[in-house]
Amino acid sequence: MEVVIVPDAKAGGELIAEAMAALVRRKPDALLGVATGSTPLPIYEALTAKVREGEVDASRARICQLDEYVGLPAGHPESYRSVVLREVVEPLGLSESAFMGPDGSAEDVQGACEAYDRALAEAGGVDLQLLGIGTDGHIGFNEPCSSLASRTRIKTLTEQTRVDNARFFEGDIEQVPHHVITQGIGTILEARHLVLLATGEGKADAVAATVEGPVASVVPASALQLHPHATVVVDEAAASKLKLAEYFRHTYANKPAWQGL
Ligand code: F6R
Image (cartoon, rainbow, N blue to C red; front, side):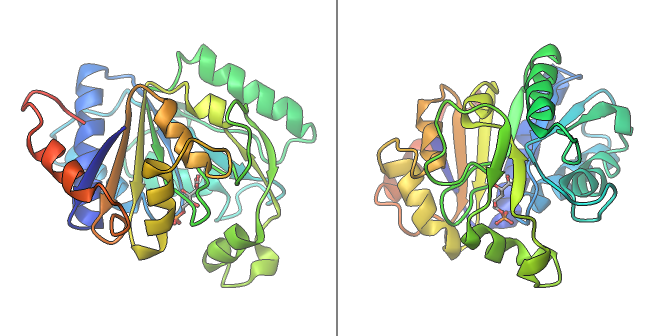
């Protein structure tokens, strides 16, 4: 995997937004997989600015979701559908029809998961999948010990993830659902390009285990090592536990100019 160390979250957002813009210039109807949480917000801000300033025409781009809470009422402001509509789809000027995600309120949850995997494949597959990382090493909501071959399915959140996410629910962990639908690790690995952004010291251990540790389901993000085109963008704080930080800096600084992310 390629590891890029950037000074701060804003620089990471700008770098990844430019990679997404370059993809959309090459392939106007690209299917962009987005993540929620705090980390990717600088990416969405930078991409929105590029669209508004006419640097890229994203009017034919398509957006798909990585995961969704189970059991929140339709239209709940913290459902990931609402978040992606608010932070990505609307700012980019796209219509809801350009957006696909799993149905977290389906009665047949397993059926909804299988339908989502089919829908992604029928849409031609994800061109670029953005990922954040949990403090416990999760990607999507594939918590530690998730099968590295898993498909979209229902998962139970760890207590740590519910604590981490309580900030989106007025700080009240009781409001954080216990269950989610998440693309499986096997599903995520089918995207053509994986781009993980991690910022802040709280992610440093998870990043070191992902990049420099063995591939192991106890660190789900380590599955990125199996992907032919995975990029990990980290700020200085999130990079602080990487033993190979200097090597990564040297490699990126000496990359051929024509190579994008
Ligand atoms: C959200 C998701 C999660 C988050 C992760 C980090 O769609 O898939 O894996 O990316 O929990 O969240 P933040 O960015 O809020 O630290």
